[in-house]
Length: 244
Image (tube, rainbow, N blue to C red; front, top):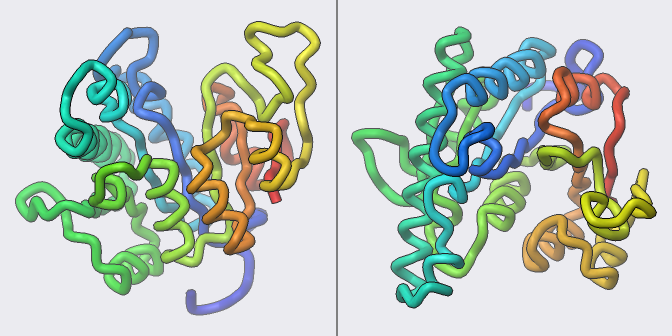
């Protein structure tokens, strides 16, 4: 970036936002729900308007999840590539919603499909961020056997993001057990990556956690379905768990 000052009142200059594909389907059991996508796009725009540079990675579980496809007998590599294509569909949907709000956006795919997305070139992606364009990284890492959690952590490191924001539906952070099943579940305000691994807390997959830990990249888990939550945390407010 051209300078080290923090824009506006934000606590970070450049962040990675990771959301699941399921977050885009609203109350439906499958696919895309345009009003939900529009709401999430407004959340992203509110942070973009603060001057924060934003990367995004969106999962593909609302369309196709490679691991579940493999569990049903499909060859794993093929299933994972199908899951990567699902993430491209979600990225294009989010791009459309953001540009409807006047936010310039680039979909950058790890699998070449030049008619619908740019190929991943790190220096070009960094330049897009410097020009205040939202960059949505699609198709995972371009390799099977790696989740979009790992893709988000990898791209966040490559883009020199200062934190990964992981938006969750129905939960305001990381708990010691599933709060939907246990009334006595305790939320952590802050926890270390090593504790996440040793306690087997289901935040990200282990390879993503290790990659973030080894590169000192903070992870902030926050409620995606709370209006203004993303912006609020960047302004130093709200409820969340920070993994350090």
